[in-house]
Length: 120
Image (tube, rainbow, N blue to C red; front, side, top):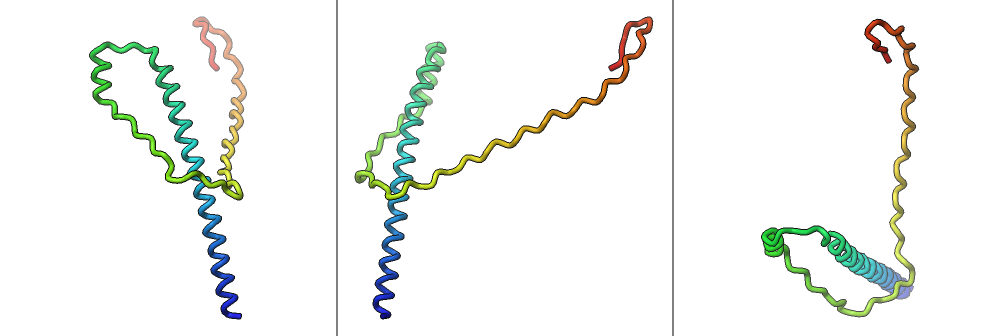
């Protein structure tokens, strides 16, 4: 009886480790997709910004200061399909806008004097 309980505990631990491994693999896939999306967006931004002209001396200085692009790393093994998709992080709703404070009732306009000024 004690031996079967031990085997059941080991089995439960293995199932839990498998679930965590699959969740981690799904998170890695999401991170890779996000990185690729950022790379595409950066290229698009670079293309959009390229309409601005720089002087030759400025562009040479910028090119010297720009870091070299990072090498693309290939995955060590093919991605594993997750049994259950990871929980999506729920976006917090934007705080409700407060109503504009009611403006105080306007004071009656002072009778126009010789100078033509009115009080508000």
